[in-house]
Length: 498
Ligand code: N01
Image (cartoon, rainbow, N blue to C red):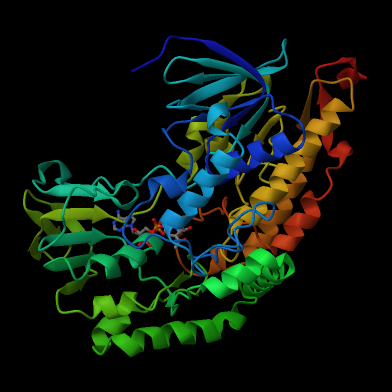
């Protein structure tokens, strides 16, 4: 129920209580800046790890790396932990730092504007509240608006249908004929989990994924004790994972021939499980590995080889009341349709449609001119507004939590710059932002994400890569390590015009 309209004021307003927002909140507390509010649309913290609960959901980045360096968890039970354990980690952080008391749950941000007279952000929520803050930090994530394709006839379907990020746990798949649409990271994880329960699994594949073998490793209690008691060992373990992951960036960044051995390994992964040469060909991608996210599973192809599985590559013509008609006219009855069709990536920013200086709205401007930021963190014309895991800071090879940490440090440095001046705000200079974008787009044009011969969510509708950081993560660390005051204009005092 909508609460009474209220105005809330704080120094900092954080949007989202996932990894980004919580990390920012913790570092604000550590920096002695407790005057902040977190807005969260749901009723619990955790972001993507609260929303994605499909069977087999796990992170494909090792947990010792996919966690905050300042909040290690020596107790991870597996190398690649499952959703429940990551969600527990995040909830534990909320408890430890008292973040729930600072979070306004059930608040969906509807947009906001920069008040140039007051030098404050005003943010509206769908529930009718208004939040006013000097600093705005958006940690909304890129992968949270489910993409459910508008298939002809979908409205007629009489069965159950849901998206992988909205898994219907009340619906028992046992003995059902289940159509799965999509073969990305989500499908590769849940298909092996449901295959034995369902009567039929009809897998609609538009483009095959590169899937390298990967068996999870459980971390035994003895090793966990060592990690707990001897932090340098845990740190060495984490560093090992970090540098091993970084080595992948050499191939992804333009030396794609270096990725050939990985393609061979992935092809062997198919060959080991799939005897039928026609099916093998269907499952073998024709684009370069790394162009789409590289997936890891030793269970996926064995699942596809089961007799109750059919892989349909002829596309989808329409949905009927009782099933799906494929592109070749074949009709398959289905009790349920599961969309593993990913997310509307750039729409994720719609919730932060901010009107900056001169009332310019960010989302229409980006739609017209393309998404541009400085370092994925700040945007010219939007004083004191910061993104965490913003455009062009996603990764195809390492932990985004590492990126978030660098961004948080940068945001704190921007706040310190304001504190050390007579100004109320800072805004990145347009020419600095332009230079940054020219530089990364030039680098991206050499990388496999842009010219690897595939279409992926890394690219926008015009084929421009607005998602991936083209480089090593240590290069990002280097670029964000120190904020250059000369990159920013001071806003809100005589100093701004001096
Ligand atoms: O989504 P995706 P996802 N008709 O966009 C197909 C992270 N993640 O949820 O390739 C038919 O990758 C689409 O086909 P095509 C990770 O960053 C991480 O699986 O576009 N098919 C594709 O096969 C990941 O990259 C983890 O031709 C349609 C699939 O649906 C990101 O989230 C786990 C279609 C979508 O794949 C997204 O992964 C899960 C249509 N109209 C997610 N539209 C781990 O850490 C789309 N498709 C392990």
